Structure formats: structure tokens, C-alpha cells
Image (cartoon, rainbow, N blue to C red; front, side, top):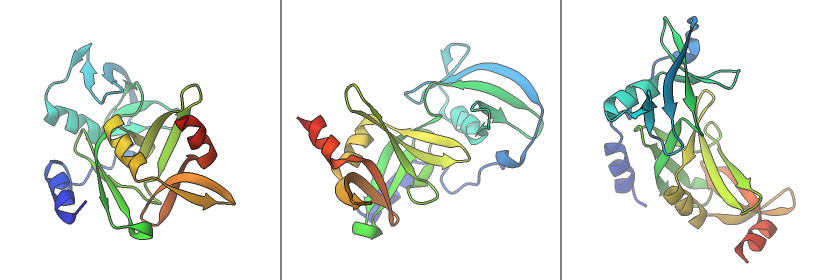
Amino acid sequence: MSLNSLQDMLARAPGAGKGLPPVDKWNPPFCGDLDMEIRADGSWYYLGTPIGRPELVRLFSSVLRKDDDGKTYLVTPVEKIGIRVVDAPFLAVEMNVSGEGDAQKLTFRTLTGDIVEAGKDNPLRFEIANENYGLKPYIHMRGRLEALIGRPVMYELVEIGEHIEIDGVSMFSVRSNGTVFPIMPSEELERASQ
């Protein structure tokens, strides 16, 4: 992918470059739970009805925080309201690959328009379902929040994977910003491919 592709991705992210509220610094009282849910496909629901306005979803996503208790909240300076998250609060729907080898950079855009570059501060992690070797990749966004990497983007990510020796074991991995993110041992990948 080229610099033009990255610029195109940024153009599709209306909130890119704008600062986020400092929700991690706010300590308002808990005001109860709201019947709001973020589903695994990245869609937001209020009282069982989809929230159809992307601007409203972006606004809500900018004040999300996951606390030590493992719950996700909408946080303002004066209140903290609990919401439900089925999987991850964000869904990565696009990836840009620039550079090669240790200079390779993976940049992701979420459904809500957030842009994040994988690296030491925003690591990738992978869950693998034992029964069918189903791969679920995630990227750290901010605080304790992650984005599930959508299936089409996951396939793109796997396409750029490579076998890298880590502590004497060949691991199928991807890299970004000089950091290697192991997905699974190469041996397991071979078994899963048969």
C-alpha cells in the first residue's frame, strides 16, 4: 500500500486528528446502567433499537472507558454510566500496510473513525478458538479499550504474516513499528491448514 492509501484511509476517518476527552482523568460518581449495547459487529443499540446516526455513535465512543472492574462506561466530568459490550467496543474495518520488514507499519481505522497504528504502545493480540482454530485479532486502542479486527481485515493481516523465530520457536507472526506480534506456533498453523 502507498502513502496515498493511508491518506485515503484518513479521509474516511472524520474524527482523525481531533483530541479525545481525558476520560481516564475524570472520577465522577456512578449513576447506574443504561440500556445501551455495542454488539460484536460494531453496531450500537439503545433500548434495543440501532443508533443510526454515525455522529452520535462517534460522540459516545469518544467518552468510553473500561475500568478495573472489567465493565465499560460512558464517562463525563459529572457522571459515569454503565453500558454492555458484547465483544470489543471498537471494530477495525480497514488496514493500511506501509514499509517492509522492521520498518513495516500497520495502521487501522475503526468503524467509529478512530485511527490507530500497531506497535509497542498499541499491541496486537490474538485469540484462537481451539475447536476450529478460529482467529480473533484485537488491537489496543486507548486505556483498557480494544478493537476487534473485522474478518475481512483479519484475512489481510494473515496474508502479510511471516514465520519468525522467537525464543527458539518458529512463530507465525506479523510486525509493525519494529514490534513482532506472534499469532501462533508455525507447527499449529500447519496442522490447522490440513
